[in-house]
Length: 140
Length: 140
DNA sequence: ACGCTTTTGACAATCATTATCAATAAGGCG
DNA sequence: CGCCTTATTGATAATGATTGTCAAAAGCGT
Ligand SMILES: [Zn+2]
Ligand SMILES: [Zn+2]
Ligand SMILES: [Zn+2]
Ligand SMILES: [Zn+2]
Image (cartoon, rainbow over all chains, first blue to last red; front, side, top):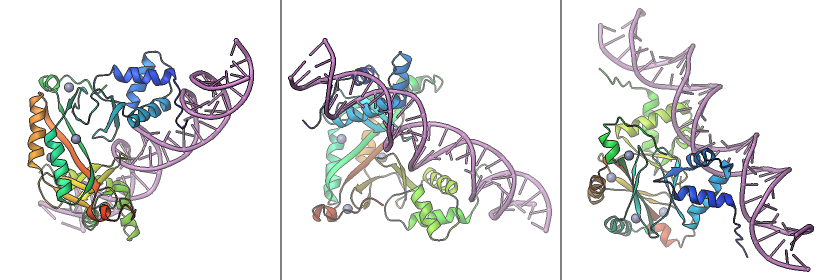
């Protein structure tokens, strides 16, 4: 009786749009995308919904090197990380037990408890690399 | 003859201020700190200088979870990462060849080039863990 | 000291994100 | 089905960090 979530077409629109997006996308870009498709959804709502989805664990979020918040529909339930093309946004989910253990270990070795970690790799995907840097088709 | 860097008291002021700071600090905060100490340095200059220092490898930078850029005087010369107490801000520099190789490897394995990576571990340091979470004194 | 360039700094301009708050619409209920 | 309560929306203003502008103020080699 506390969190009475209501079903709105806006929430569904964001879910669907996020789900049909390859790779990470910013709130701004997702809003533009929805508007282009004829939706009249508001920007603030997109921000709110994405934030909510992230909190509920239905979306992944990370900060781009430029400080923008990016979101992605979360497919694999468990904990994982990402390899992201900084040109076209192509994203590969990667699991790395190796890194998980390392993070745990280094935290413990220094007396730290409740360790969390941020691990993301950015680069240029094969296609974008092959383009010789020529084919510029920015994220989203 | 290309990069003719000049020595200005502003650059030195930022260097010194950054060096005498424990843990990470934002450009805004560093500017305030300098102003409080009587310096007349401009905000834009602090931003420029910090950015330059980071580029030169004389400072570390990372994005706080809130999306703010934080800087820290870099003691160990090479590439490294950080273990940060999310309660008191205590920071430990950590090197992790293991992770470096993993990042390179996973990028290469997926056809990605020019890999960059973000790797940071947040947790509670020994003191803050021992305090039972009582002593709350947020970062910076 | 001179002159060419870099650097500075006050201020405006951007840009992403959040806060407002009146208007809207979901859901429960009779 | 209508009504009422309340979560949600969205246009817009506000915020806050960062960057751009550009004339004035230093570096530095001569
Ligand atoms: Zn790509
Ligand atoms: Zn992990
Ligand atoms: Zn601590
Ligand atoms: Zn590294």
